View 1 (cartoon, rainbow, N blue to C red):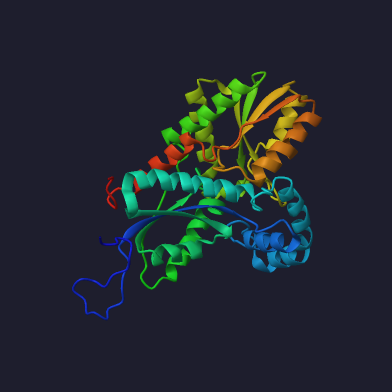
View 2: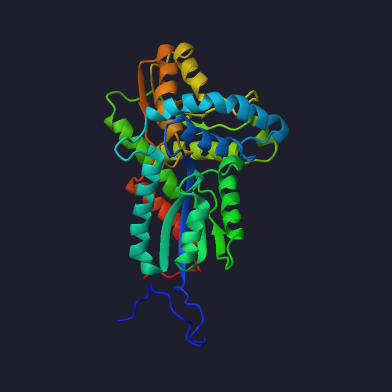
Length: 355
């Protein structure tokens, strides 16, 4: 029986021709990244890579790098390490984002294997930290992938997320002697299956709650307000996701609200800020029971497990709030995996055929 996965010499080539792996298609999903550990040096390496990215902080390097290297990276690794330790997966000795992304990838791999067999190879990478984009592109090329579909797991486009992930993917392709054909998945912020998966997660959380929340806060990662004026569509895409979710749930505007979190630095960022808005709702509107979800995050991470479920929750309770329900990200929920695989199917058209 012939091994379809083994490298072979081309049929009409000379016997001494280098062997070539059978051609297949790679699906490479990507998320933001994670430190290798919570110690100072692991955190410093990770934060240095992240905060040195011009897509993330676009200030002049002459101004930013001295501030980053001499001040921020001497202090912030300690605070960030403590935050990560509060949510760290101690059993696997890794961040929840890494655990969840691996689980998502396994579920996607299983689903696509049932549809396409051995013709499709599925793996994941991180923009910052490990496993690196470069290493995974190399593995796919070595495995015979002549085409790669790159899928940043960000429902909404932003220069600081989708674009920088794409940048790193393209850099990796630049180093390949035989460069695979590439496609990049566009943002899926309005995909009906994604919206439905979000809605089902809200309905499930509300059904399990002792008391129905008075309002749902859709908290998206923030970016400087300047980015909106410079043409970044992130703000508009976030607003549309909230609107579509509201319509799918059959709610009105009093039951759902868009906010933005994770501000740092001196600039004005997209408003309202989640941490301030939840306090305002308690203090000024007398709302005692809220729910918070994070539609822009495909997997739970430091910004959801620590920032939302600890810092933002604390802000609400200190302002007089009583009941705080955090709705987990979609993670590896079956409805989410089905939505992601549907997006992948659309983007594989013309490359592979279902078995």
